[in-house]
Image 1 (cartoon, rainbow, N blue to C red):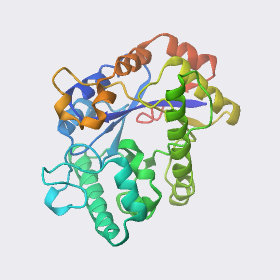
Image 2: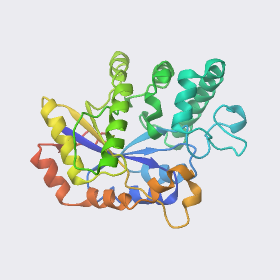
Image 3: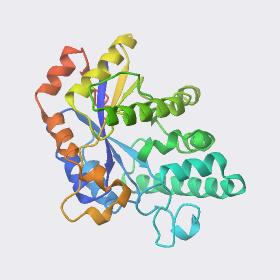
Image 4: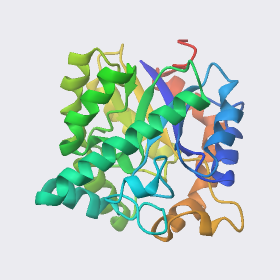
Length: 299
């Protein structure tokens, strides 16, 4: 069974990009999602674009920072300050229950997603188009028809399906409740994507790891999730493992949305960086017969 490690949030700020890049030559990190329109997207593209063996992904974003499209053209997404104004909860609520305002929101989302894809193509010409998203917004069921349109029009080659298998890792009660709720909700929203992707001939991981422990991945949590995969899998599948090794530098707090500052400033970022460079990680993968895979190199 093959596995590849994918880091999220490249380009969000200098510290996040720096933390991700520091892992590339120290372990099995094989892919990076870059937020197009983020302040450091061009820097991230320049640092990563020369590494052909690293798979680069458009980390579609509707929730944090500034959009790639002109803010005045997407008023349903961007406020007067030119930044995204939705939280995940308000975005989902309007998509599901927005009534007459929903059409304007759909139009803004389509324009923004297209702008992000076009910016990726401009910064990284010739790179295959792979998609995942910030807080997994691309799996929201109302956006499925738009995702199909973008896949067909732009020739997307890979889309993340963040449907993690049920497992119970060791974690405090509050973390257990939050993690299981997030894992179950994402699995319910994401699982139907598989049929769409298969019909369009688009690849995805056969299994996904990282929803429960999002931003708090450790070797023990990784082991628990991969054991669930081993019990379910036949042996020839591919597992995508989501990690968040990039964190804020001192003084960068103002660069991220206040609601998410604790996530990026957490000591868990350093824990994930250390895990990716630890000799215990390849030992764990070997014990589970998991072979590190680099999608960008196909090897």
